[in-house]
Image 1: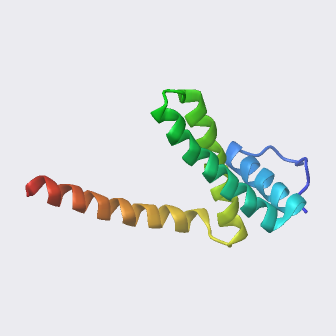
Image 2: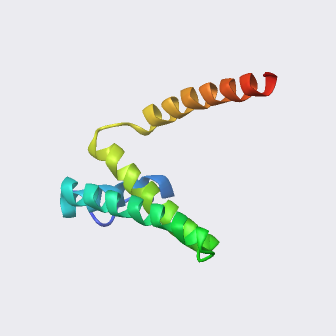
Image 3: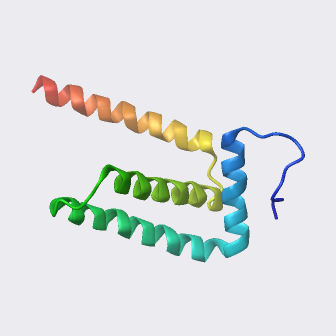
Length: 106
């Protein structure tokens, strides 16, 4: 289990990773995946609230942050490194740019 305190100062990124590992260690993979599904549901529900004029910027920030944190935990649980995710995002951004430029030309 990851200790709650560190002997040396950590940057915010490493502190966040340590906190996510603590959550995984404490509650386990299954519960954290259930949490992710629930948070994705809350984010989807927010789209309905937006259609009714009941979604504020702060609501979006909360739900996006919750989903983002749990997706980061999922990557830890699946053994996917941050560099691998960033590389895949870069690939997908290149594909997206290609589609954008292709659509602009047509």
